[in-house]
Image 1: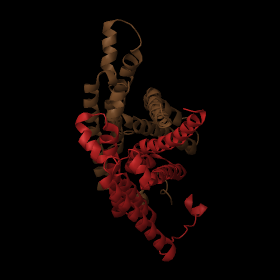
Image 2: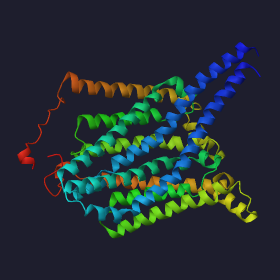
Image 3: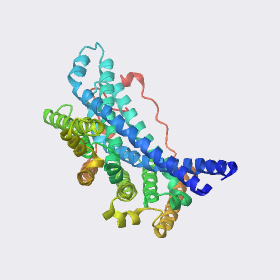
Image 4: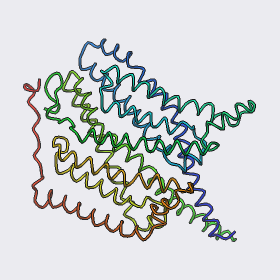
Length: 216
Length: 214
């Protein structure tokens, strides 16, 4: 082996190893984030109940702002980290949950519903968001547990088949098809969100809280 | 191979590999930053809706301040990271999205609009800023997904080859040059309007009197 070949081999190892490490870390963090999303979304009745216990409106406002901010930022961060499920090479080259790309679609769907309707006050919109988050978390967590995390376990041919079906690298055709479908679905939702914003975004000077106006 | 050869090979590998890894990581991170930028920019109506539910102006101000700070901070970080696409050496040696320099340029244009006009209150300005961001995101995300991250998908290889900076050097050079000229023009416009003409210097708003604020 010449020094140049050795240099190239080490460069490739650093780049590929680093990329694999990053993707593996994101994939490992995502189940936790999905659980956090579900927990925060379903914590709404408890948060509302606590809001009523405050003796000052200031405390209630801060509590509610923190809850809404934390809940929605968690959804946004998870959606951003899930973008890797839209990369065909990443999906077919790594052992990832096969429902990951569809779960990403569900998450972007929940964000779109939150954008175009008042999911905090409208029960129908809240139900829709809840269903999207519920379906999304199932699409992510079930293949993670029964697919990605079951490949090294010998429970017989049935479970081995299940594990292969639910992991992207052992079911590449389906994984790629779902990935391309998800790209199209998210692109359409993105265009819908842009169109919604271009129609008539609210103006800051028209904003009214219950007393006074924002920034006044 | 002598010990010196081995040392040199390792040193070169650490430097070249480290640089390539940093650039590739920034390129891989940028799609997420673009998505975050778009999500936060488009979240505006939902953020307003929450403001209306707050009972005090204090809470509303904190909410709005937090939103604007995070939204514009993310745009600024994305813009700063996008500067790597103006380095021709990197674009010609590392696989990067072909139109990434144009995406960075559109982001800069959006920042120009935000800086010199009130895109939070003027609908026309807001629309321009939104469209610039949306088109910029398209210019970044489409080659990232269908070229850089689809190299192993056989039937996409012609598209991948066309949209990757290292395999389409004929297009890459003019794109980088156009982006450089665009950056220079927008930067010059900002300098001219803010510093030379001073017409956009702005006026510091006095804090609202406590008696009237209550």
